[in-house]
Each structure stands twice: as structure tokens, then as C-alpha cells.
Length: 632
Image (cartoon, rainbow, N blue to C red):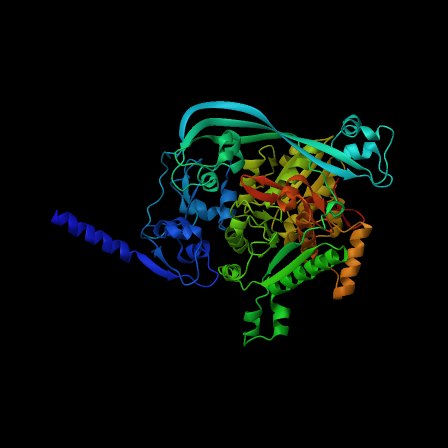
């Protein structure tokens, strides 16, 4: 017994030595602290259970030392994940992940496998692939298919020169269906008349592998959705009794894998929310903008003028702010009852003062929050305000992090942009060939994993494109979409010249995932790109309507400069949010029903695996008249 006591004392002493005490700084989050010490948030929660509810300034946390109970950050592979997607999520390269997981990845990436996504410490053992025992007890393995139907009802106000056919087509209805919903229009339409519109969205779903899970103490629907890798919507679908609340000991049905096969009919109408605003109730909007005024004023090395010249992030903030102000002014002119508060977020990559701002101010009556810009800080705001169910819009971050029910990502993800591109290829019944540099392994892996029908060109021993093989991949009588990802301007020039010459025999259009720097080198004539009608996906559209040109003119009049993309984004995000909180149904119901479009951006939010993402994106191309146009 005495020996056991000494062993216990030794282990306790070792555990204490293997921990670091950290005092929480102003605005810090668990995620930021975990990154600082190269551990995971779960390591911190394990030693500090109360931290799950958020951390306060000057709180002391126990942090495990690197190499003690943590061996580097790990990631559990979810269905359909690729090395490319995981690498992007953790901001590392595919080659690094492969280097850190040589043994584990010998047989490729597998579902539920744990891999390192940060460099393992010297004392770490390599992860050896082993059988993973899931928390879910699988009772049987069957495949079920069902059709989930969602019906949305809303109104449409008839404007001058509209026809029944035009309205029906806009909402994916037949004229007969429109007349059935609105018998009064059988004899014709009247300007100002309000019509009833009903759309149906159906999804064909396969649930592969059914299991059951017993609810543990203190678990919530949100925590279960994260733990079981299932959306809250899926849990409610399979367990209708959850509508009455979650209770300890409940046995829930859960899918081990869920596949959305296709959307049979998915119509979300693009509407003008200005026509349906409710001006009877005062609304509160908050903007968190990273001006960092205190840092600038206390900077003894640079003047304010020098900051304006050199600080790109400050200029981005000011451009967005100018656009947002224009939206607020427009709302005032229109008589919308919105009170706007703007807070200066003092932020860096790993810290901000958002926790302090929220703790010192009353947010209980706020209808929506826009910002901050950095996604980790937007996540912190959403978590802190979740108790009020306040929608938080992340306006500029391309990074997609936590799937929080009240966090809305205004920038479409790169995956969504690419999906829009491939949907266009499918619509045109096109043949897709990718010319990917040997150094762009991540892009090649992404295409093979997500779009296996894509053909891949090859290079010869000298690094030149194998034109004989490439030509054999083209198809006559069909549009050939050629995806190009090459980093050298000289190679781009030779390939675009070759593609131009092949246009005599084949219908070829050049495609890039983004307009990267190499395409702008002087060696590459713009006529090559316009002749090939180079296409790319974009979150922003081109200003082309009279109303959009009026906005640009008025903005320049107020600011002595034409609006750039950040200014347009500031206007569109702010104006869209104002109009949605001024709907009788509120922001949340509005985004679930309506798609909107403004000067340069579209907002078509949908909930995917628990995350609220914007699907509003465009396909643009270089036309022969040297302008950029939108693909139809």
C-alpha cells in the first residue's frame, strides 16, 4: 500500500510538471491559446472543463506542455474529406501532412482515421493506423432512401409590364400552378396586386448504416451534432421527439453516413426585400470593425498618415466602412427604423477585445452583428452571443471554421465556387480536361477526389505538355473546358498559344479557379485570354445595371474615389442585413427563404452540415471586346 501511495505522489508531481499556467489576456479565446502553445482546444478543455463556456480576462488556465500529454494536433477524418481539404482547414500543405503521417497514410486516407495536422513533437510516436471504435453502436447496416420535402410560402407584388408566364418562370412554377394559387388572376394581372407563391424543395437522401446513441449528462443537440458528425437537422429528422427537448439517457437514432444524392427541385426566389420591410419596430444593428485606433495612436514609430499608406488591413477596414456607411445612409433615406452601433475591434491574428466589448455592453436587444473580419474572432462573437440567438455575419473571411448555428459566412467558400463551375460544365454537357502543374498536387488531388470524371493532361520528361495525348482527350462536337493551373508564365504562354490553334478543330474554353498572378505577366497577351474566353468563378459580379452605376457614381461623389470590391462588399453585406432584420419574419427566417442580390454580391444562404454558408456566386469570363462578362 505504501508503494502505491508513492507511485501516486510521483504521477501527481509529473502531471503538475507537465502543465503550464496561463493567464488569459484581454480578448483571448481558447482556440487562440491552444495555437499559442501548440496543443488542441480539447487538451485545454480536459484540464479546464469550465473553459467550454468561454474564458474571461485574468482567468488562470492549466495548459499541457508540448510533448507531455499532447503529441501534436490531430484530426479525425470525416467522410468525403481529402488531404487537400484537411490541409486547407489547418493552413498547412498536403506534403507536410504526408510527411507527418508516413506510416498512417501508407494505404491512403480512411474515414475515422486520426492523422497529425501539426508537426509532432520529438517525443511523439507515429500514428499507426488502427481500427477505430466509434461512439455510436451500429445495430444494423441497411440503406434507406427517402425524399425530404420542404415547402416555402411567400408573396410577390406585381410590377408594371410583368406577365403571368414571367412570374411563374421566375419561381419555377407553371402558369396553371400560379393561377391555382391565385384564382383572381385568371382574367389578368393588376399592377400592385400581391400574389401568393409556394415553392417546393425536395432532396433525395440515402442513410447508410443506422445506429443508436445514448445521451450522456450535460450534452446538448449542438454538442451531439459535433460529436457524432451529424447536422442538427439530421438528428431532428431521425428523432422527432427531440422537439420536446433532449434528456439524459435518451436513445437516439443516428446515421453512420449520410449522403445527399441530388436536389430534385430547389428553388429559392431572388426577391427585393425593400418591398416587404416592416417599419413599425425599431431594430438594432452592431458592426465590429478592426480600426485598431488605440494601437495607431500609441505607435511612436509611424504617423497616422504612414499607417494609411502602408497598413493594408486598415485600408481594407476603411473601404468596407465607407460602403457600410453608404448602406446605413440609404436605410435612413428609406425611413428604415434601424439604430447602428459601431465598435472598434482591437485585434491581431490571435487576440482581440471582443470579449471585453460584449461583457461591458448590453447586447440582449441586438438583432444582428456584422464582423469582426477575422474568422476566429467572428466565431468568438457568435459563441458569446449564442445565448441571445443573435445572427453574426462573418463578412470577409474565406476561411470556414466552426459550424455555429448563429454564424453566417457571407463569402462563398472556394469549394462552393468550384462546385458552381462544375455545375456549369454539367449543364453545358462539357468535356473537362485539367492541365495541372506537377507542383500543384493539392489541386490534382482535389479534382480526383471530388470530380473524378475530369481528364488529366500529362507532361513529358522535359516538362512540356504532351500535346498528342492532350489532343486525344478533347472531344469534337462538345464544349471542351480546359482547366489551367500553371505557375510559370512561359508555360502558360505556350499552352494558351496551342489552345488557340486547336480552336480551329475543337470548341475550347480556358478555365482557371482564380485569376492568379502568373496570368497577369506582360509576356502573356490579353488576346490569348480573350480569344479563349477565360472563365473563372467569383464571389463578386460585374457592375452592369443602371442602379449599380448610380451607386458607383454616388459613392465616388461622397468619397472622391470609385468603390473597390471591399467597399461594395461593405455596402451589400450591411444593406442586406438591414433589410433582413427589418422583415416581419426576422433575419433567420429571411435567409432560409429568400435569395438577394445588390451591387456586386448575391446572398443565398443555406445550412450545410450545421454551417450557414452563402452560395451566391458567379461565373465570369474575358470577352473578345476586352470586357469581363457574366456567363449565362
